[in-house]
Length: 318
Ligand code: ASN
Ligand code: ZN
Image (cartoon, rainbow, N blue to C red):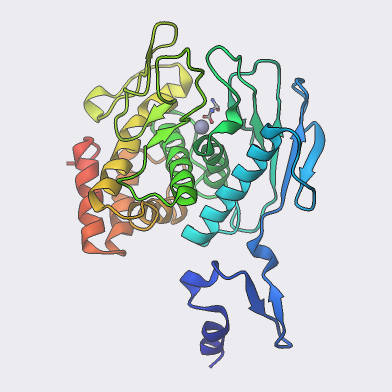
């Protein structure tokens, strides 16, 4: 009877996270405080000292600084996607506060997750504009926080490339979720809009067509392989974690576009369940492929088959 009562007042478990209100023990309607993010944005003012000066929290007005607002909104977008698509309460599943620092360093050409918060550079203005301008980049960096508090994938070789790839998946899903895009409508680009017009390129990475995101006189060509036959063996970049992530990225984009519809529902849910369902921290592509197929089989036969075929297409399984 208690379970039925909970279902009546809170909705079925899979939809519960979408509710903004619930009923407390006295029968009163209360705001579901856990549903809301707790965001704080800091400004490093061009220094490399973290976190910097606090400039915006949940109760503060919009800032005069667009980078502050873009970071704040991007944190909220990622929090909402995790909660509504996967019923995950923030990065750690337990309501962790979301912290970001903007204007980190001078002409700093990157954004990163430092193990406990987001950090955004402004870019040098020649190759990169500010890093807060892309929701997929914000979702990627926060994705590292989700991965760290779930499978904890080791940031080296194949497990590191999976770490990078799953961060891209979470970044792409955040962007698609807030835009309301289906897999067919999505760009599958990570970092769309952060290159200056001087760069010959569309984005940092292209999940559906790895290796084609840019081809620039100064930057060179996008080094990502699209399948295992072109896996890059290197000691740089922790064994090519930002390079070989192209392989699992393409598996995800292929599975999602084969299925159509919203990517977080079919392929995304299989990936999320594989990530949070006992994956080993040194997992390689094959272990992850098998776990996503198992998770997909619990969603439906068409999802299982699309996921299996995608991993076969990139050469991670036979
Ligand atoms: N943007 C990069 C990333 O999140 C920063 C780095 O860690 N190399 O992977
Ligand atoms: Zn990353």
